[in-house]
Length: 516
Image 1 (cartoon, rainbow, N blue to C red):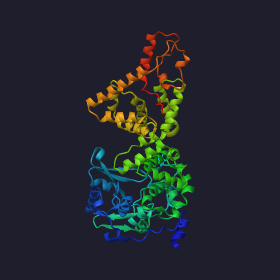
Image 2: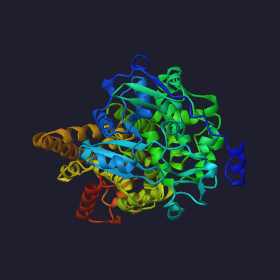
Image 3: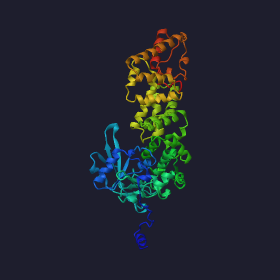
Image 4: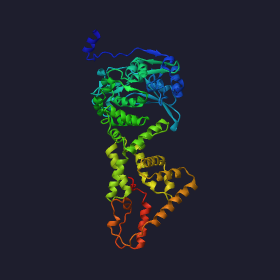
């Protein structure tokens, strides 16, 4: 009572301390974790920290996955060592982040490298007593520079770098099943909030008051969707009290930086459960309002091409193959590009700049400045610009295309178009053989195309000696639009033949397919 009075006089919050939970140590016989599923690099990090006299545990989603028999894709470690102390123990370690300072310990190099993320136990802080700023992480960057614990006017935590004991660290985590600590040396799981019990009951439950926890970090709304989608095949469901505030809390996401929302959207779509995520968003009434591009994904998920792309992404993740956000987003936005391209062709714009302009419009309308002018946009543009080039299968064009660094992504995109009937599957099969064949097979394939084109020209009906200008300017024949010259009445046969060859040469260099 005296402490409450003193706090009141000093203007401090009188909010009751949260229940930090009772420490329970659960042995291997009860939790059943298979040590063989633990990554050897995570073991090395834990062992190194413990040898130096620190506490260290595998923590979070990795423990959750181990408990249900899954092999985690990522391993995080929690310790009582500060970031500086952790960094000093490893040759390749880097302190990153401002909102939460953590350490990345790097193993391997190039594409084969692996990162073990190490965080320091954090204290559970009363947000009412935190330093307050008016803006967000970006607008208040200079003001936040020297702060360890700060919130904005809505109570969202902008800085959380006050170290504390393990029980407080567990309480400030989000879901009970993500708040357990596994010591691979002793094979003991430390549990403060009934995470093991919830894991066995297949329940996703927020620690503390869900409304307050969503206010502290609105991105927890997206995490709730992601975990529900990932774990739904195993029978997990969101607890009613955890799910109920999601819709009303959605408005809090408006204050989260767009770049962070973009990254969280990619996590939803690239963790191997994209289709399940779309269904969860619908079930939880979150299909609109999280992020504009995510709204579009949900809206178009039932379309054959987008659905095929989502299925392909889930399949590749399940097989341990890499996935690129540029490919999936290029699939989602392809209909916008295709329609804008065709519209410009009808307006007599040359096919190549028409495609470029259509792409620019899509970037401006759908992606904006978040990632629309970086590497992601460059990769998407290359995939799209490559599509008309697949029509050119004679001469040196085919050889040049397969040498492009992004050929495989462009081909996979074209193959997906063929799979849903947008273009002829024969074209995709030809390129499959050409890209994997030796020089002799490639030459045979090109010769076959040349013979087929010669036969088609021979079978084509003879054109009249004179044609009207309007007959050569049909809006439904975009390939004819690629020739800059227009037909003239009474043109000499030689001039007509030269114009036809010009059109044939450029026929695969940018115009939409008949199937588009």
